[in-house]
Image (cartoon, rainbow, N blue to C red; front, top):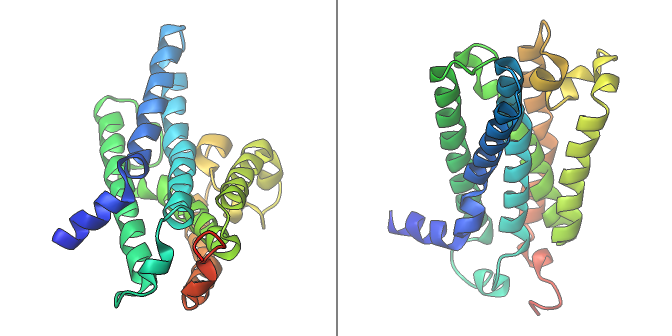
Length: 226
């Protein structure tokens, strides 16, 4: 427990609170929409979009910062514990916090009668695949380029492309399994659960790339670290 408390402290409050900030922000937007006269279905859609789209983006940016902005990497490489293990612990803490926030938020929406998504039992398929996919992409690019700017740009660019070209993904059967936000943007569709599982499978290449890059942690050292 002491080790995990230490890693939580190293993760930083700003990074660890990213999932909370995301759902609080979407809640504020929903309140403003309701105040402007939006009906219950519109407010429900705003909340659902926040869970499916805004939460994954916030977590991906937080994961990028875990990898790209860690201080004293050269010191980590001299310790008995592998740097890959340290990063894994911190990313696991971020993933755990994200899961708790998403489940609690889903429960609150369901209890308030504002849940318009899939059956609650299947609700993790709403946010988990997109969060894991964007997070894996961000971590991979951060490790590959050692650049916070490039990693956040890659994750943000993919997120924006999926927002702008939803109709293009919907028009092609081969592209629908790769779409990150099918419930809020495409109104779901028959077979969307299977597509979410297929999307999850496409995370494997990113995960393999991350493992390969972490086998040579000295690559992460920049001129400043030297």
